[in-house]
Length: 162
Image (tube, rainbow, N blue to C red):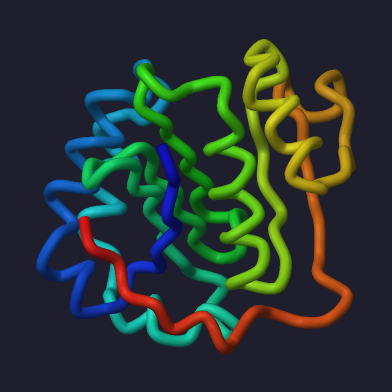
């Protein structure tokens, strides 16, 4: 089954944010709390229009016409970094692909992930992010950062079809 990656435009975010956030809540294994979901729901869609400047992007993986994964970075991951893959397709590199797409769209990422979640730590490494802080230095979280040397992918203007 082929996986297609689509970036979410401001208009598509307005139309589909509830569905995308419901997906994240349903399949995020409790990693996304109520406060975080509320903040994401209030995201100004205009920020998605210039990810190279705002560091805010949302990307969706579609497989066979259904949503296989959703990823969102706000402030290049400093304010929010969410990657959720449907349980039926985990372990197939979709999370890594989504993270790389966020990196390409925003130009850089700087995020914190729980050190206890080995799957997420491994995904960040596979996506090309480098470990910046050890868990002991950041309260049980690993800080990852990465940047594109060629600059953000400004030509990827494909719309999301959630």
